[in-house]
Length: 329
Image (cartoon, helix red, strand yellow):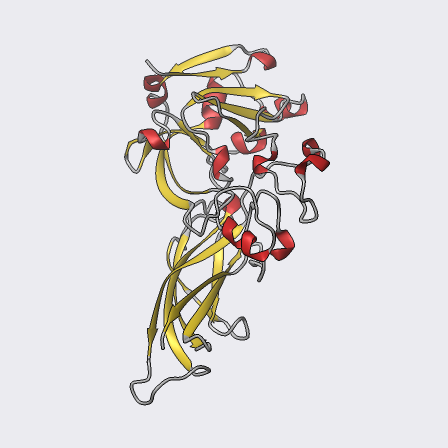
């Protein structure tokens, strides 16, 4: 008996109630999309500056799934939105989502109705009904955007002149404030945009040293080879074109091989890629080697070396080089 309301009443088109079965009669699409919490790697900000507000994540607040459902643009058209550009010209710039648990968020109409934007109202995850914790029976999937815009347990979709209300859209929770601001109460949050399209990220998941002194004992300062594996992802559908890995603090770089995900459509690369790289690394005084990765997307954005310049109260958007170490001595 679950239904979702598609509310175009402000636009003069009324409200359409759709059941899960109604949606399943529409054309189905499948999208593989990575979702990442905007606070992923927040712990790095705590190391670079003052403590931030929120869980001190490492690189684990991210994952990927294949989502099945119907295009949001098709649902809106069924409800009476025939000309999104005209609606936008009339000021209806926002598509708002409401959840059964009271959460609300919104995206722009340009994303919601873009045939290449692939925003869907999903009822399947990896070929099965979406599990409860992931949004059963319906959730939004807005690929390339911060995960908070992918609202779970959707009960209402509304075309509006205003963005969604509440802390997830208008409050501090998802606003990346300037590094000079230590007290959010001193600024006008309404003038600060919420996080929408995601940036550029990478991570290292495995380091396997090799050539560990079979011929002669190793010591700090020596160079060894290591195989590194990891992931990379860019928001906005921007394809990851390269991942660079260093074992000497950025003096030299090795180019990784993209082993999976490199064949995604141009401008619609919604999912992460996996990579592998053989890297020369210098042994530190602590007997460890430290590797760092940085991704490059098709706009040739590069991850910055440090997040210190981007410190913010909420600890959002840390995309500095990802560093990982392992002991070899």
